[in-house]
Image (tube, rainbow, N blue to C red; front, side):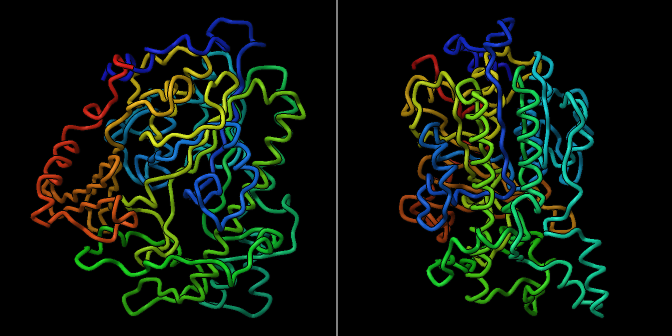
Length: 491
């Protein structure tokens, strides 16, 4: 486990700003922006439908990681891993639990910055149980007491009851899957979060800060001001074409708990699963894109304020989605899988002394790499605890095309009431390989060739001509993440 520390520190000293013990004025701030359920549906990632000018501008002055993967496509799990620098097995992570239950003494990313003289502030959804994570923040974590809609749950319920609604009709009124209103940004929860972040920037601008801002959108419900819906012509929106699960793929590989089924006006078939028509698929995709554009506008407000305050040249900016999200691919409208569309998520970094601004890389990185990378970018020593990621600073300062990790490792632990299986996956340059285990025995395998099948629709795991590839990737999976690390001594 010491390998990560060695790898992370090989290139220490590349960034002189912010070295531990230096003048506080020289230490870079950190603006850490998270967007919930944000897949790589951004202009800077090649999506030609979505409208994200502010994030694209950040990418043009920063560095885009085009193949960055979360450790599990579930909010709590992904955030727990990336904010502790530990992989889920090391955390002994439980789907519904707090990471401190089994790892009480662990030092989180913001906590480490706090311990090294930074003023740390959390706003919105950062950890999954934010208000319990008091050790990470210099001042009480804050989020608006709001639902994802324009009005609170209580207000919506009271309004529906006043209209005489009850039962299913009341549920549909209280929890619609989409909402489009003529409201200002600041009337929605995420707008309030952005407003609070702007206030904090102005208040703490004269001392080193680590400001974490967590937006709820584009997580369900797809609810945001009408002006973001109006950016799109629904007739021109292309919904996913591969909306049927491939033959021979068991239910448990994709059909986990689907949040969308708990929202009103979502048709449910005889099997109890969401039955989305082509028209509703367009509506939902429209709502998702509108929500992404809403977040983009709020990101723009944060970046503009950084510049207005004269902080843009001394602030590290990180923008990530905690994981991806299916928009109808394989008939799935959620996350909770090991597939590319859920495991991959945006990671964009801009740092004052970064050499390759405006570049991108196809090198495989993982969200567990963020912790050691930010330490190095800020000039902080690593914490005494081990970190299980690898600093990606060589990619942004030496060469974006350096030979890098052989694979990213993702898993999905299905809860006991959904089968209790564990799916473990490796993503290499060309392939995704998955093994599903039940009671420690492999019960199903998947192999996808991204050169010919980027949508992962043809499982090659049981084809004789692919047997050697499957065996090689199975070996890589079982050898673990340390076997896939880059050889930095040769760089």
